[in-house]
Length: 171
Image (tube, rainbow, N blue to C red; front, top):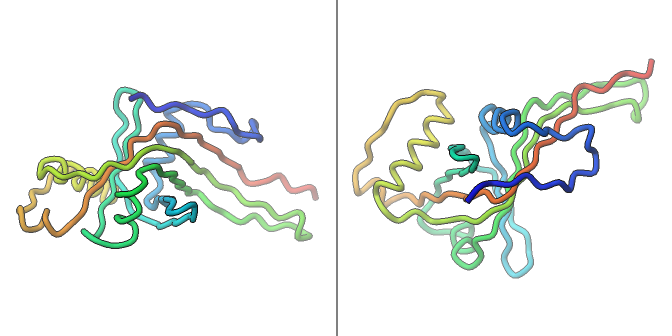
């Protein structure tokens, strides 16, 4: 499934249009906020992540405990939203309304898939380690280690990028 860019952004002047620029934001950031929904009640959790972008499709990888609220929600409702941001910088102004904030962010939607097979879990964990450490080291995991961790991926269906450079000061 090819990831799509959604065109619902109000501030077109802040939109990151080029997919390579959006993937560069994904590459630079290290924490993803994963949003889930249980009984129409939102639940959001910050996670470290890994990713691949192949054939114009973005896939995010996460890991966590083999039990808990996040996993319980995913098993019932695999729909999810994510947000990542970086390059955040407060820009001071003379008055409160002159302040601004520089940033780059990505928001996307998709479905979570829990990985069950040892080779899938190993692949996902290696993508997380590759992204977080910025090293191409390939790790092996024992069956016991893999049984003790839940690895899941988000198949991203749509995502957008937004950026705001440091605001121009009116003074």
